[in-house]
Image (tube, rainbow, N blue to C red; front, side, top):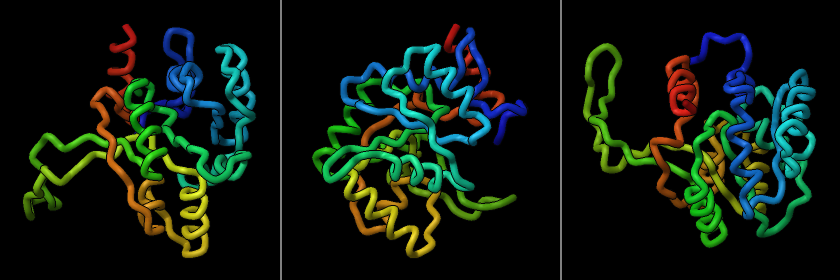
Amino acid sequence: MRTSSPLPKQYLRFKGKELIAYTIDLFQQSKMIDEIIVSAQRDFFPLINEIKIRNGFTKMRDPVEGGSERQYSVFNAVKSLNASGDDIIVVHDAVRPFLSEEILENSINTAMESGSAVVAIKAKDTLIKGNSDVDSYLDRNQIYYVQTPQVFRYNIFIDSIKKAEKNGFLGTDESMIVYNAGFKVKIVEGSSFNFKITSDDDLKLFGQILK
């Protein structure tokens, strides 16, 4: 689902502050984060720089141009980094503003130890497969809803990017790209509060929580 606003939802303002700024706050405050890079359409670069200055986001570098797909936007950001080896890359959705410091730190520590980590929450509802009619029921004990952050050692992630580009592989998120490249991905427990704002109802919920 998508919101009814013509403006991308990450730039909508709540209490005088853009949604993306609420998301960046945690990364700005975290002692485990050194740099922040935003991938975006070039038309929004001036607004992003304004958000950076207005909120005192000193860790933010200049934005990089996004691509036609999510993974290309992420690839552009990663390739712009002066990173190497065991440096840790954290990928997070701009529209997940309620990430907790605990989950962020757990995901980074897991990636430092094992190489790759994805934040996810276990399915709680009954899951069905089908179209207009139920075809089958899925075992929810082995089903997770993937969130972000998704965290990787730089050498693993850049190798996965190169393999995806070489093979023309298009993943729906970064953990899929890394898994497809042959690496194991550890699951880190997420939270229902770490929801992604994709619909008008999500925006209403975000506004209510801010109140």
